[in-house]
Amino acid sequence: MPVRGLARIESVVGLFVLAHNLMRMAALAPQLIGWGASPSAAAARAA
Image 1 (cartoon, rainbow, N blue to C red):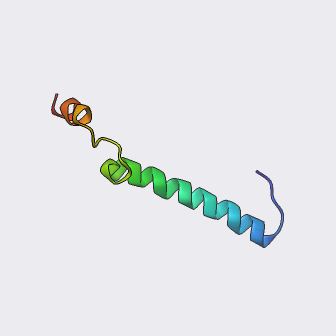
Image 2: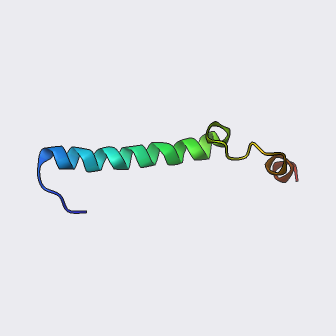
């Protein structure tokens, strides 16, 4: 994603940081975003 200018570079870096943080949150605490909160997910973890 080639960009020019400091403002655009900061925007691209910000998007990468946001994506990274969301993926880390999903991996570390999936219940915060609604993943794994269903009874079937709890049964899958117990098995």
